Amino acid sequence: MRIGKVQLMGKAAVTLFNITAIAIALAMDAFAVAIAAGIKLGRVDLRQNFRLAWHFGFFQAAMPVIGWTAGLTIRQHIERYDHWVAFALLIFVSQGMLREAFSDCDDSQSPKDPTRGATMVMLSLATSLDALAVGLSLSMINVSIWMPSLIIGMVAAAFTTMGMHLGKRVAKAALIRRYADAIGALVLLAIGLNILREHGVFQAIGG
Image (cartoon, rainbow, N blue to C red):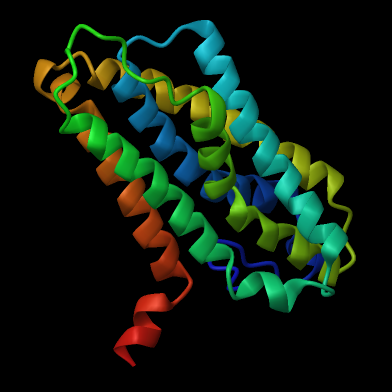
C-alpha cells in the first residue's frame, strides 16, 4: 500500500502535531463527500449530521486499528486492491446519483438521503480505506494505535460536520440545488480518480 498522505519515518515523527496533520489529510475525502451530501440534501437536520459524522468518524478510527492489528501479515494482499475497492464504491454511488440527476423525477420529491442505509456505509468505507496505511505504519514502528485512532476519528467527524453545513449553504444557490445530484456525482468521481492517482495507477498506465 502506498502511504501517500501518510509519512511516518520513525517513532520521533509520531507526535500529536503530526498525527493531527495526518488526521486532517485523511479527513479531506470525508469533507468533500460531506459537502456533496449537504448540497444534495439542501436542508441538514441534526440526525443527518450526526449519522454521517458518526459513521465517517467511526470508520476512520476503525481502519487504522484494523491495519495495526493486521501488521505485515496481510499488507501485500491489501495494497494491491484497496484503492480499487474505494474507487469502485465511489463510482457505484456516483452513477446512482447521476441516474437520479437525469431522471424525470418530480422536483418536489425529497432527495434520497445519503446519510442512510447502504449508501452511507459505502461512502464511509470508501473514504476511510486510506487510513489502513496509518495502522500498518504504526505497527511497523511499534507505536500504540489507540490515541492516533481516536484523533483520526474525531477529526473526520468534525470535518464531516463542517462539510455538511458548508454544502447546505452552497445549496441555497438555485442553480446548484437544481443540479445537486450531478455535482455530488462529479465530486465522488473526482475523489475516486484522485485516490487512483495517489496510488500511482496513472503513472503505471503511462509508463
